[in-house]
Image 1: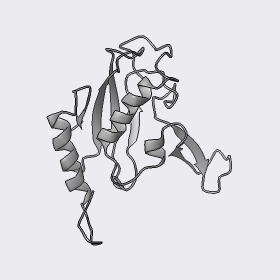
Image 2: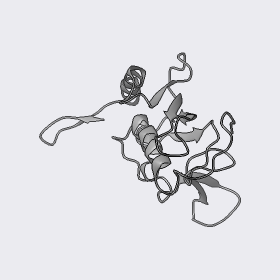
Image 3: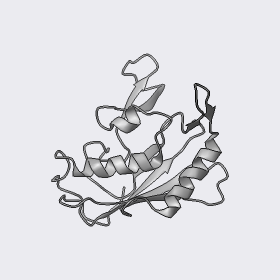
Image 4: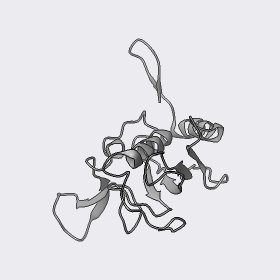
Length: 166
């Protein structure tokens, strides 16, 4: 979050930003079908978070409760959180083996080598993480995932049994 007017701006420090997000997450978001909070209240770095999405109406996800893990590294909010479904789900942007959202692996030289690789988000699969901007929040990510569940290419996909986990 950036504050200021007339060309001047102040960048809100990471922990203040996360405190704002925590407060908002605890108050509830919109219609209550998306929520989030910290995993461990004693984590002074505020890295590990839990999210919940209640599946959207008129989809195979309707009424299902999905649990997610979000991890905000030291570079958050400059870089997006890592997002992983804990509840099993079948979405085009989710790795079916790990529950991680839309990752590709590449090395520093864009070669397909088995060493020196790291994950990056495939913007074609889940744009908000792939095209991350500092102003985006965990709430934005969860809300966008709920919209993704209702998208034509996901709303009728066969789902794993309810209550199964990655």
